[in-house]
Image 1 (spheres, rainbow, N blue to C red):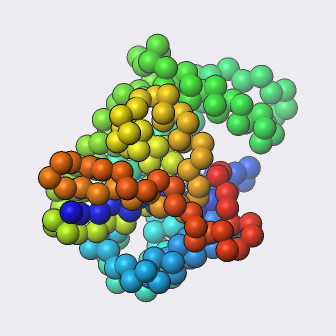
Image 2 (cartoon, rainbow, N blue to C red; image 1 turned 180 degrees about the vertical axis):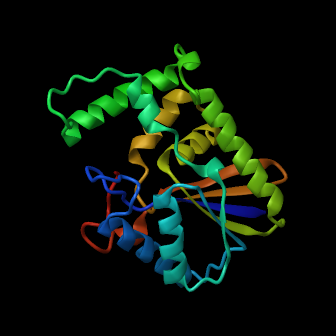
Length: 219
């Protein structure tokens, strides 16, 4: 069977001028993950990341820490959903120029609930069903590249990981909504692909981050 190790990118820079940049914590999370994977003797056949800067940087840092000489492939199919477009369609209630973390979280949850509900699909450039189709097509495209015993490390985001996991568990938007908020930065979700298709083996493994205080983050 071939193996997909789905890695969520390291912590991005919330509240800064450019969110799509790893924070110092995010960079360290990537290095710790790389060292942990190397410690298991893992050398992937394929290393893939999305087109977002935080995904690309995570892939580079973990690869360097692991000592891999595997070429990096970029596939925008692994990109996160367009959260800015989703937020634009959800009115907010905060009064300041910028929301607090708590206000942003409430706004984001309301916006994603609206996006996944299915009642407003026509208002989004990429609806929730289209997002799911895109993620599945990207998985299929990668699986077709792997040998029967190949391993791919994929640096992506919480949304694609949650959507794929929900589908493998037989769930839809409700299960996705429960999984997405708990995907840890630089965590690993393991999917096996064989004759019966894809099977979820582990979700959101972040044991490599629990040895150092401050590395466990969700945003």
